[in-house]
Image (tube, rainbow over all chains, first blue to last red; front, side, top):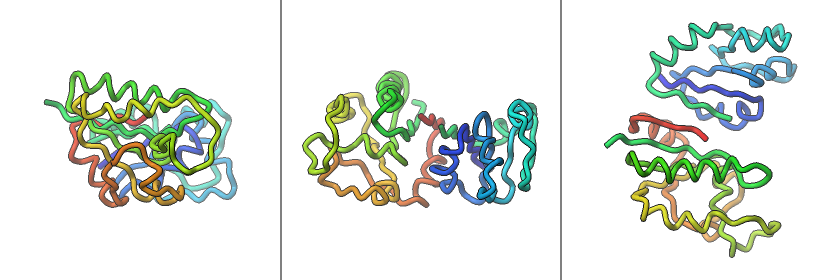
Length: 86
Length: 118
């Protein structure tokens, strides 16, 4: 499993299609602004860092799994690589 | 020796991100077996200054790309999809990277000890 993190909506648009079906996708920092775009359709199993949503006052309307920093660390440990798309 | 893949995904232009990623690649080649993958807008870094494409003059750091073999960087890849989406042809490129289809790119990560994205 490879963990892909996206720190901007642009990074998500450019690189999210590279993920394999077994990979995990995580929105961090300004990447969580994807979730305020009504046209955004999140792929199944998309993760977002809860603290970054709260910092920006975002309440997601789409289906997204909110995770904590601790869960992020667990994911990093479990994954073979973390690819940080910027 | 540890194998590290440097992923260069930033296009040239308003920021120094593209040049910084190349600097990191050269620095990384000193302590690991470094390889390069140009992907997304990163493939635009490869456009040679004598290409037929019309573009404004810019600081041309990609003349240093031909030095990569001297830094023991022999495996240089380019995402074929990113390359074709941007309408590039081989004659536009300053070096000859190995073109990889997207499924091959997805497999490429697994063959390296570390992958660093820029």
